[in-house]
Image 1 (cartoon, helix red, strand yellow):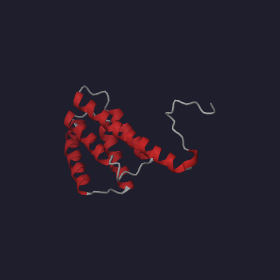
Image 2: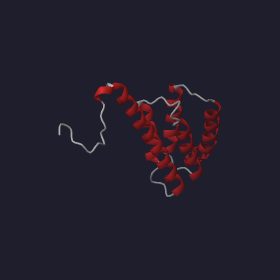
Image 3: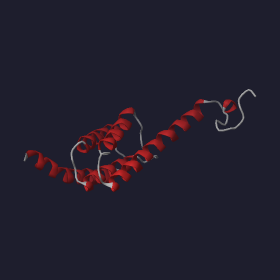
Length: 136
């Protein structure tokens, strides 16, 4: 009985969290990690399809490549939220999980490429996809 009441409050809580995150364009990193922790806890529960999609929609709003501040904790929480919902039977939830993870990995790879470009002097950069072998 108690679990039923908790499960029924998740949709209302997700709705409220979604509205709060939409109001604030930029959320401080610590606050963002707190919200992600709440979403991770919620994603561990057995939820209805709409609540799972709301959680994933919030994750996608946090994955804005222009404002995101990547950290180990951030990436871990987003991945945990997604993987905890992977056993769903809903195709809509599965495709939203795929979109969320794709966005996360795209941002990570873009940041990695940016970092590599600034870390390697221009004279030493080479095309890693070149068909020529080095030293040949």
